[in-house]
Length: 279
Image (cartoon, rainbow, N blue to C red; front, top):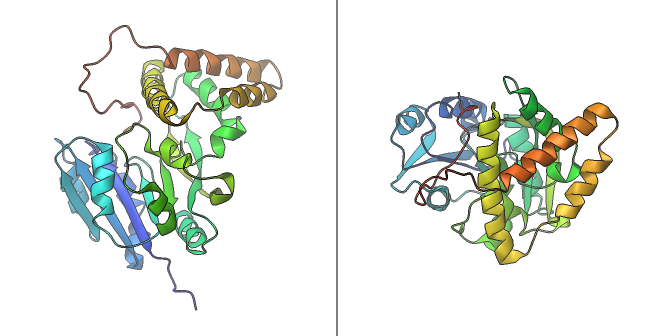
């Protein structure tokens, strides 16, 4: 007989997330009440109230990682729990109990090594160009079929054995996605997690530059991604002048995101992210 609730762990790396960690942990209240899931918040390099806020939540294990590194946080949190499967959740992403349960059940069955819940973009408050970019992005099937981009993905114990420890690369979800074949991973038709998009052009470009830098780093190691397929799917999504406009905006942002800014940050900066959606 199946246990009334699935077991597993939720791992949340958090770097200066005082503005959003409360919301994320509130979404897990029902899961925590099950008593079968470990929730681990790995506060790394925090200089704000993230750790204090997370510590106020009963049933949450809070780790202090000195280095401001998502990789270090993920690996430290992996050592803090023995439960499987494991959902790796960005600190600004809310997940419902039903979605998490569906992912854990699917991975417990043994047929999959990796999975994630569905997601949707929340562009409320975003500029017109940012909204156009995400409308086009949402119409590209390949962007909705990988483990990356949702701020949430999960691994079974066998899937994690293939991963080993998280490497020091930008874009852990992109890296993990490429470890598994199509038959070994799945995007499940759950209640979607909400991905809050950047609100401004400048913020979106910052995110795209960081993503492009991380993807390029990984492509040099394991081979290039299928840009041609993305272009074909983008063109196929055009159904008239409005979708053509969205596609053109997408191409413009994608190109700009691959270029280095004229004034780049110091080489030692480890975290570059959008702050406009973190409230």
